[in-house]
Amino acid sequence: MQIRPAAVTADTSSGTIPTGYFILNVTTSHTKRHAGAYVWKIPEV
Image (cartoon, rainbow, N blue to C red; front, top):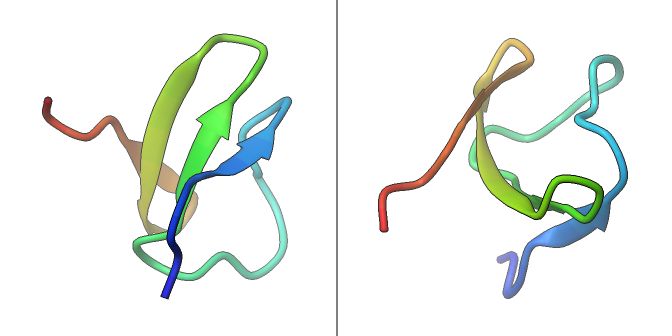
C-alpha cells in the first residue's frame, strides 16, 4: 500500500510501473496516478 506519492523529477517512461502508482513530479508540482501502459492520469480534486 502506497501511503504518499513518490517524488520524481520526470514521468517514468520505461520499466515496470504498478497500475495505480501515485507520483508527485517535483519539477512541475503535478500529482499523477499510473493508469497502465505508461499512461498517467491526473486525479480529480
